[in-house]
Amino acid sequence: MSTAGKTREELAALLAEHHLIGAWARNNAPPPRAGKTAAYWRWDAIRNALLASGSLVDIGSGGETGMRSVTGVEARRYPVYMNAQVLMPGERTQAHRNLRSETRLVCEAPPGAVFVCEFEAYPMERGDVVVSPPWTYHDHYNGGDEPAIFVDGYDNGYNPNVNVNEKLPGGALYEEITKPDGYTHDLRGNVRTASNEAPFPLPPMRYPWTETQAALSAIRKGEVMPDPYEGVYLTLASPVDGGPTLPTMAWHVQLLEARQKTLSHRHNSTTFYHVFEGGGVTVIDGERREWYQGDIFAVPPWTWHSHENATRDDAILFSIDDWPAMKRLGFYMREEGGPSR
Image (cartoon, helix red, strand yellow):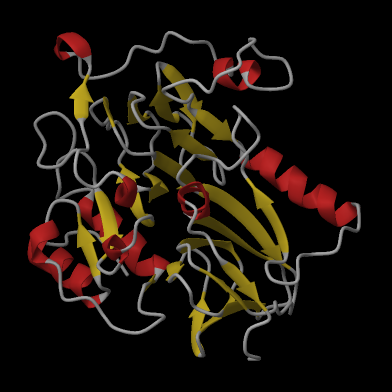
């Protein structure tokens, strides 16, 4: 589908047709769909809407929205959710900090596109996850010649009432990059500054796809048996304590081998998925949902679910899950061995 020359009305129709809503028009959302698999959005529709908005919606200082993002209509009913965002060549969002976690998975980006977090630049490369914890300054800059598109993961449901939002001191619009490349990563590895307490705010962190891919490969080379419920399943660990990515949610990556089918299980946490590679099916309380590369979908809490890789190639899913918050609150439950498919 071509996005050239679209009007505002055509963009609004495209969004409504695919149950999406733009950050610039959140008051005009269609009613949510019903059903266990309703929270599902096709990547071609998301991407086409983002690219069309690139010439129709202004962002940043003086723009009509701080970010040019598209969210599934049904997504905001959950405490954690994913949406997608585009930054056109030469654009930069205005720096700010607030009291929610903002995490990004890069889908496509040109050289020169960066996330800026706490005065350090993190290059956007496909498959990278970059985390801006609560109360850390962040903005984004696309210095390349192609659009940069990334998936956001938020934990809005854990601070819904007072999301304090603060801009840079002195009216500055953008962060000055004062830290050298790799600064935070190098200080959060095996050698780090001595401390017995978790810092506040937590440090930003970049999880390069090269390292994530190497970890997936190491498990397979080591002939480690895949988890029967998740396949090859990894957590992007916190650089502070080695636990989940953040206190409220964890980022995971999982690999389903060709024709692999997982067993059914359920938990009372919410999971949002982005299909990084491949295609397959997820069965949620008996409802089948096919998915393809790029798609975003959710598994609601306390629903039996299982996955199937329907292709002859590997399938890779990234996901966010709020099990860390549920565990801290003392509410987390999980059951395995659900009804057969």
